Image 1 (cartoon, rainbow, N blue to C red):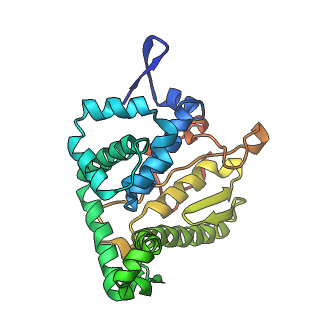
Image 2: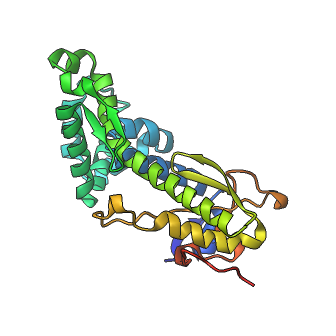
Length: 281
């Protein structure tokens, strides 16, 4: 879908190729980083205060917050914030109010997300641990044994453990799928006597050294292997989707500073993943 942007006083439309070219330029680079920060924070149930401190206060002016509060009718949010944060300053108030409004909209848009977060926290509080679908377990016995004094004097520790319980099952699921996919792809590379090989893996990020002649073939295999349905997640209606960037070191690209596959003739979103892709001629 074309995006309408304003540059100085001239409106023009940009397509995907234009957007990709500008994604590392300001202000797009800054907006992308803030968006990633916000999405990650909310996926694991971050609070409005944390959202305000980590995103809004670095990106919005007080005047922008005041304008938002007036145009979006934040009367109810103002009362909630003042009741929740008794000692909040006049400088902090507008940011937390805006964050509260945006947070509510986010979770109203994805109602099942907060249900999952609440279920994970409740389970950890009752059992003293959380567990991913692959069986990895994180002990949170403090949540099970916490009393009123802990809620009062160790609230930061309690909140941190609760955040862990909503984070761990998802993070481990992604990491487990990634490790299995990397192993299966490595076996396929060895079987086909290919020159490419896996180089690094951190959490849910996989790095590969790819021979140019094998690029499309390997990417097809990787997309199939990483996005295919796995038995442990068979009941989930959501398919795992992966992103890809390519760094051509000989062309001056640097590690973690690569380009979109589009620049290498690959339409990644519509690129077909195959279990056993044949060599291209």
